[in-house]
Length: 328
Image 1 (cartoon, one colour):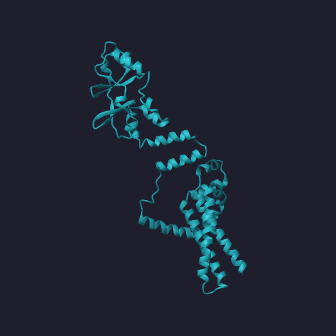
Image 2 (cartoon, rainbow, N blue to C red):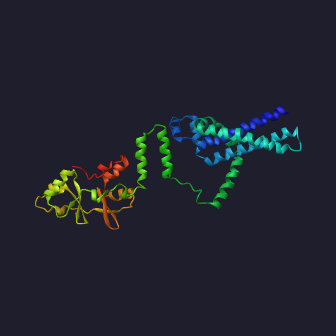
Image 3 (tube, rainbow, N blue to C red):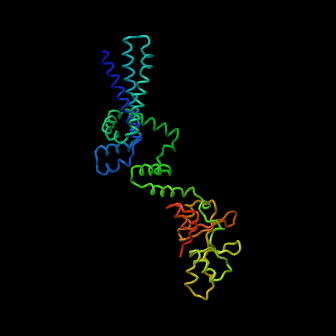
């Protein structure tokens, strides 16, 4: 009888480890590793996929299985110790089972499942589905009760959000990089795209003092000479401290020679120094604008070009080569 009790206790601890480890494995699964198996119609992978579609059902199954296993193990442990000490059987059984359950039923299986989540999920998926069928009446009752309570407590919070947050997407990209699906450089580009939402115009603009510009009163010859010297075709035009607009060198020298070059000045969009790059990009795209003037307190403090925005995504430009006003 004693041997039978010990056997039942070991089996119950094993069941606890199974359900506890399975829960950790499914919640830690690297889904991207599973995708190619799903595409190949791999049966275990398809089973895992079907389980993941109902996380609430998975959680209910593992929790029910774990709790039943703990109760069974505790009951047999109490009966075993009752053979030797009737008065303190419950207390001794509790003190004896807590460390056993904690170490062999929780810590060890969860640690292993965390490190080998995909392999374990593929192996235990049939058993989890079998357990879901066995526990289905209990799961249905528990799900109905918990859903009703959640609807009363926090109806808005439990509504599914079909969108991923920026941080969730970054975590996915990190996992994809670890798997070698994309390169570190490509991950960097993606990260910088997300950084568009936090990077401000002032962070990457060319300060006015460093920008190549032309004065409203300059001649065509002076403008051409400056364009050749610095290699830019689009230049902001100032009259003193006032911004007049932007001019394209080709408009000046490939049109009527007798026409005043100032007639080719185009309006230059102005943005606040603390405007986000993604907003600026959206504003300039409809009209294919290539340059904006950055203002602070209604005074120009710098210029920002589309090349600057692209550089911010593709690579970090060196300070000495920061201004990119479209070279000749």
